[in-house]
Length: 94
Image (tube, rainbow, N blue to C red; front, side, top):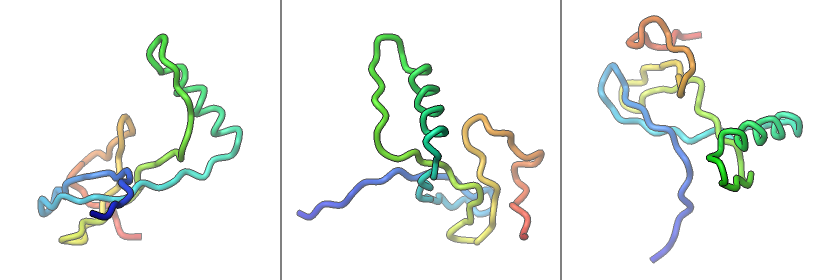
């Protein structure tokens, strides 16, 4: 049996048609100062007594997503980011 690399992805469900969608994460392009700041924040959030070792790539969620079935576009909201006033409102075309 062959093998494949498993990668992180973000999933979301289209409000318009109900399609479950997946989008690859976006590798963050950070300056050395930004990377050190993030590493310090992650260490501060680690449980007491644990050892957190930074490695790999910082992954960001997409800012815009498009449904693979109906092509409706939305603003990507992740975690504690501010949501739009109407979550059923599609992302406006630019």
